[in-house]
Length: 98
Length: 167
Image (cartoon, rainbow over all chains, first blue to last red; front, side, top):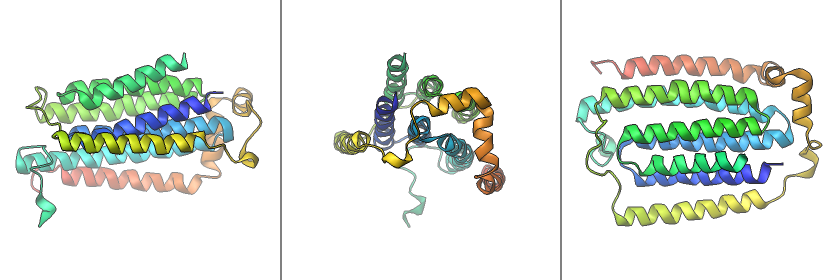
């Protein structure tokens, strides 16, 4: 049974993703760290699905669809911001600060 | 076997959040995604592993690399790490999160929910890898499945509108 180790790896990967979001200022790398967190959640779902039945794998399927949609829209926003500001450093992106 | 791929995944994630160049970051993330696919196979989720390689490592990461190269960010400018206070805050929050998740991981599962050990692998062998998922996907989760298609349509339209030259 790999449930405990898999959940531990999932926890570590999720925390690394959070640390990446807090640590980096490049918008694209922040997006990649969000993908990392989604993958850590997927790992937890798959590990628990082995124990509790295949419904967890269906949820992973939906998470992947949402992640694909999020990546497409997010990268389009990144492109639009880069055209507008010529930078991806989130410290210089303060359009919504009012 | 599991620990080898777990180490590869965590190492790839560490390199991903510390590399300066976005391209190197993306390639280390690809290593993490492939290791996760291998872990999925070890956890009796072969179909999800195939999806992981195709959707994540294939489609999403290609999209990321495409945008990085379109914006010509390959060289990686001066470091984009936050200063020392930001790093300390990130470290503290990360450690807090790890301990919280660790406590959750150590707590036992609810007993009545639990199937007998090895049920999933036995069902998978009886019905096939895809049938196990598709059975509940097209019965129990049929409405969410259809809603997903609307979500993807909205994402396509939104991406096209946002990336248009005249905003």
